[in-house]
Amino acid sequence: MNKIIAIINDIDEASEIQNLVDGYIMPLKDLSVNYTKTFTIEEIEKVLKLNKEVFVSVNKNIHNDELDKLKKTLTNLTKLNINGIIFYDISIVNLKKKMNFKTPLVWAQEHLTTNYGTVNYWNDKGVQYAYLSSELTKREILEIKENSKSKLFVNIFGYLPMFTSKRHLVKNYTETFNLKENEGQAKLSKEGNEYLIEDTNLGTTVYSSYILNATEEDFKNIDYLVFNSNFISTEDFKEVLTDYKNKKPNKYPKNLGFMFEDTIYKVK
Image 1: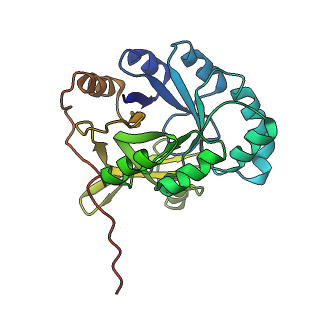
Image 2 (image 1 turned 30 degrees about the vertical axis):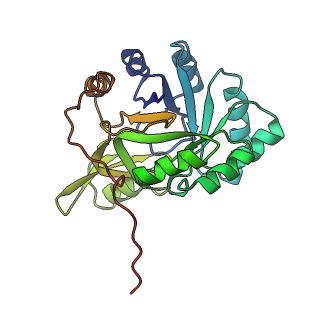
């Protein structure tokens, strides 16, 4: 049976939707990217009181001068009763072994989580979960589930991060042309599409021009189906979750992203 897990915008939103979800993904402040809202350890503790599953995202690429901070953060995180740590940088796998903490790990290397061979490799290294790439087709997702030993996360609703740069692309642009910055957020219009952009202290992320909306698809025994509330109001997000629970289509256009778009390599 699928579990519904939500990427939330704030603590109040977590409370608003608690009867509609099985858990939350909470990005950790200063150590996570590709989210519009991050949370402190103290805020995570508050959400844990809702008695739902909580996975904390620590998916920033870690630099050498950040390792001490990461170790201290992991020490604090693993004292909490969280269900897992979502990671990008494999230093966290090594640190788990060295620090001997028991908190489960979720492999989430964006465009690399695309096959069951590598999912099983990390499972053998003690990583119990994998967060699959949104560039996979539905057929590939179900194939990975059938052949992997890990529990899987799959995005089925929300804006998707397309790429991240550690450079401050929006801030650099506005400063160069002496323009007013809108709290680090911007939009890029190209070929009739608008792409959401956010520039934070950790760099710039560009999001998809569409909302992935695969809520009407049957994902059979995929363990965690992820709903992302970034750039979506709590009211609308709650409505989407309510419709899903009632097995009704939601108000957003159906958009399946790459789920039925096989990647074809053409050699010239």
